[in-house]
Amino acid sequence: MTWDAETVKMLLEGIRDTLYMVLFSTLFGYVLGLPLGILLTVSDRDGIRPRPWLYRILDIVVNILRSVPFLILLILVIPLTRLLVGKSYGSTATIVPLTIAAAPFIARMVESSLKEVDKGVIEAAQSLGAGTRTIIFKVLIGEARTSLLVGVTISLGTILGYSAMAGVVGGGGLGDIAIRYGYYRYETGIMIVTVIVLVALVQILQAIGMMLAKVLDRRRV
Amino acid sequence: MSEKVLTLRGVVKEFEGQTILDGIDLEVEKGEVVVIIGPSGCGKSTLLRCINALEPIQGGEILLQGSPVKAGDKNLPVLRQKIGMVFQSYDLFPHMTIMDNITLAPRKVHKRDKAEVEREAAELLSRVGLADKAKSFPRQLSGGQKQRVAIVRMLIMHPEILLFDEVTAALDPEMVREVLDVMLELAKQGRTMIIVTHEMAFARAVAHRMIFIDEGRIVEEGKPDEFFESPKTERARNFLNMFRFQPASRS
Image 1 (spheres, rainbow over the protein chains, first blue to last red):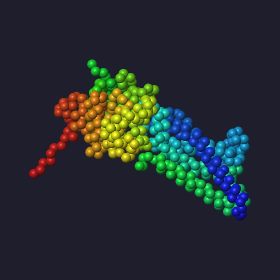
Image 2: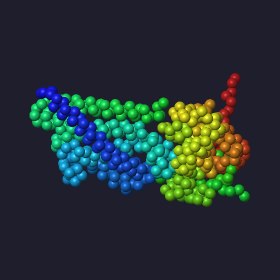
Image 3: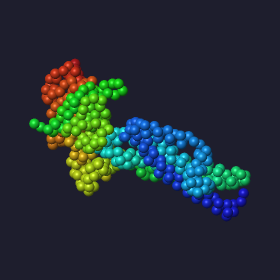
Image 4: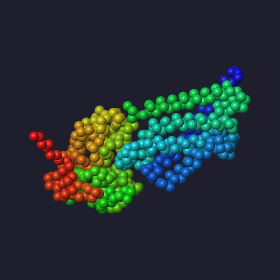
């Protein structure tokens, strides 16, 4: 194993690509998953706008998407990836399957956060004449924000794990480096270093998320 | 003749095959204070929750100034703005300051101007003795203070009728008084109120009319003095006796 400037540069680029994939996938994952999670919460039988049939459909769709193994999903969505990005390898292309895998996961996290909000508080808002929109944005999201932020942190960690898996099919980033150099070329040193960097990234993201959650939690004064 | 604010006709509430309310008829006039008492589980809290459609009813009708209050109706939020409710567990929004707790609904629902609403909120807060708490969070307040904030949060919507659901039941004894005093003050102002409570002395002091509910029905109603001095029904008598104590004899 050689620790020349090139290796270091490769690792740094790997970190950059991984963060790029993870942050954008999480962002797009929330663009899809947040409304889906809200819909799941609101349409459930004891939600503020019960629509049992809608809940049932969304519930099944989310479950199906969540049960497809990520590696299989990665391959299954290649046509869509080509359509959207123009190619099926590299870090930008990996954002597509990552987002599709993340969205249903995020929807469930959002759902469980929003359902933690005390029913009494929601009823109080209803008794004040608040409409669905006010209750969703001011009461549900406002009161669940700590839990939602913890959810973001968990999602980032999970998606980081997925992104490394995408290395198997040329996904770019640290996972790609670990597979290509560490695994195929038997450079165990590089593999270990990439794993350590991945662990460090998860730790840092987790620490930032938890710190923010604590700052935003007004209940603990 | 005075104006009817609320009319209940044959209200039936069933839940999982059980009848909780079994044909409740009730009319409340403007400015009237009605106090509902009854044994635990008799349906008195459910009745209040039905009045603003937090619980759907299975029979009868509820009219607020002539408009039907029905769960799932399009204009239900509009009607609910006219029905103020205070809950046993206060249910303040934990992440919002006291000021935001109070001003959320008038700003978002009534679309009123922020500065104007905050002025009114500050005035109401000082009237219940909490002028210095506007920037606090619910966690920092005692139970009695939280309940007074909950009352202010309801009042700022200018409701036509106020519902109080055992609002002192979760409070330590020394805090009960401060909340009851606020309610007495509201009664003096001529507000229309329905109060569910276990505070008998308070009930007698504040009520224009007492209603005794048992097993989902109105068993007895009447003027507070008559009701407490000489209840007509056996069941009401037995219930009231539970609040009386014989002095322990000492030899």
